[in-house]
Length: 114
Length: 115
Image (cartoon, rainbow over all chains, first blue to last red; front, side, top):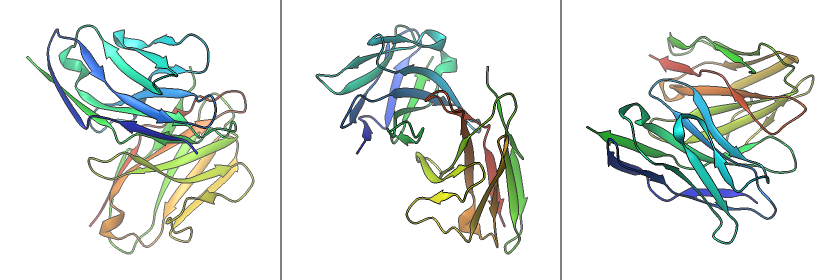
């Protein structure tokens, strides 16, 4: 079975400083992993995805994530936070067997202070 | 890119009435659609999976008679909340997947408030 754990429910950074949102996963085979962002009262937007290609995945808005099998991690990073990055971030693992079912982490709220 | 349109974006209804939410894939054929529910300040929870032309598969704890899902065509799935109660107030999001890849395309979500 697959599962995903976001290690921080809330992260606060200052504008211009790096962002690190942590995610660990559990999977019995090679997973597909995603990061989604949800701004208040809006739907989800895909930031990036890992599907067994390059382990360092670059996404939109300057975000990237590195798949580390040895650590079962898929942490999301950004070198410099913007105020507009304040949102809820979800780490997601595919349910496997090509079903398309997604299993969501609990979410991390990113606060960006001026 | 692929677009999924969800309608309405928000709805307020009285207790005891039914509300229908539509999820349309605008430029691809969605063989599978998923319905999620998000409680305030919590993560999304999968409610059900629907495949075109067949009955939906509900997750444990989701009442299939209360949350009616219809996926009659490759571009449309509907979720009907029957006899709504205030505890059904939530944010509902659909996602659609085509037959080719693992990426799920999400609708904008529907904010349901039952008064």
